Length: 635
Image 1 (cartoon, rainbow, N blue to C red):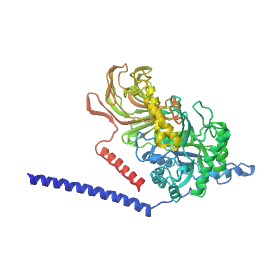
Image 2 (tube, rainbow, N blue to C red; image 1 turned 180 degrees about the vertical axis):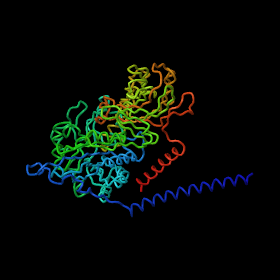
Image 3 (cartoon, rainbow, N blue to C red; image 1 turned 45 degrees about the horizontal axis):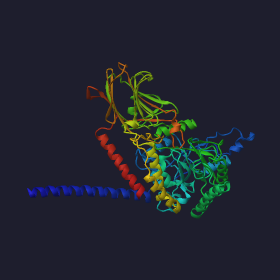
Image 4 (cartoon, helix red, strand yellow; image 1 turned 135 degrees about the horizontal axis):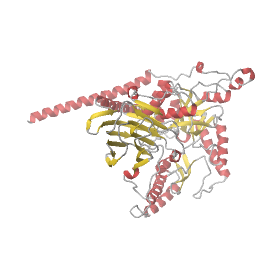
């Protein structure tokens, strides 16, 4: 018996050795692949062929009587990213590499070609014509790992991009931001050129949700207390320094010296480290119609920007620029973490009127649906329905009319918006039963009649604390952030004293009569909800995340009808944006929809999900992508 146990032990040990060796070999081969690719198969950016330009003559000359008919002013779009990360997490605040890759695929399929900063300068200064679908691609916030993650797509489509930097971070070798060494390495890579986000990322005149004065914060302090704020803060260059009563803390002369000092430091560092100051600048965060929130600070910014840079992106939210705009008042569209590919394309289409190649994906699945409003993309087990601006999306299943059913689906759209399932309906969605997630509420309707409503924050167990507790938590977090991250030792010591006082405070809890705290929703929030709907005769049962909410609720709609999905922009979405950006397009996301006979789960009417080998293949593909991303960003 002992001998048999030893033999079994040796077999398991040998099997593990084989597996371990195989994995080690695979990792080594993967590393070698990237090294060989880097050393022997490096690609180089090729500028756009001038023959693709409609006319290279001067715009000014072409408008003269002798110049004949003027060439069309194509203008250009500017698409920017705050960063790119390797994993597609719902918690991520920036775009995943997979989403970025899909967006670049679609932009290329739509005919967009990248232009350089020099092309933009020549366009505004000399009237040089641009390609019909010219695009300037920008990566903001200076995160170095982003450059490695986007490089494959730049090479694939011969796209050139601008990486923005913070001058203050260039000498910080321990930071996540682009350093001097990184910057010089990027300049040796033909797919990159450089721009500036300014000297530093800092915030002034910060007030929390309860109008408490948080003062002036550096980047790390701001990141730690962000969740306790609304829109009530400024970037460092946008205004006078103000006190808790919003009164000026400095004179006009002091404000001018402070703002000028930032630009002078920036210019000095770039000149010392790079030999010149980049031409492209993005003013953080203007979007005010000027160059600051206060007219006096705006005037100083304008003066310093025009002295220091060749161009400035002063606004965000729209992508299109033409000769009617100033080269110092350009606009860009930031692709956000919740944008589907078609979301980005829809925004571009709305700004420009260009024909774009909306993503369809699985054409076999697409043939099963009527899409009457908006556009839909089918991705293996996921259907993304994207609205037109300030409109709705509507898609109806072909060749399937049902009365009774049992349906499961996961909804992954942004809480700020409406994603709906229609049962026993018609193709115009004017009849039947509507089950919706809208603005973080679960709602059931029949026509104009509301049958059921459940607040999802309450469903999750909230409210979890009182407003008084939340306010105190924010103040404590602020003092701790100052202690951890501030460079002003006097401010740190003051924060220690204040923190000790705050920890002694007692505020009313929910149980003690405190006012319930409800968090503000934001357009960048992402959520995932599992929904099950059972409809039999005149009775509807409903489950959310495995919890039954409705048990045989009576409905009046009877007979067979269509099954449809809907999406709609929340009309008041502007008030949900922490960054003061509107978004008039919405994505409803339906994952793993399955419809069965309520009497027999084995009788499947419809399904769109990975099964068997497909599920295994998808899991392995995701795993390998993560492995490749890891080595791409670490070696």
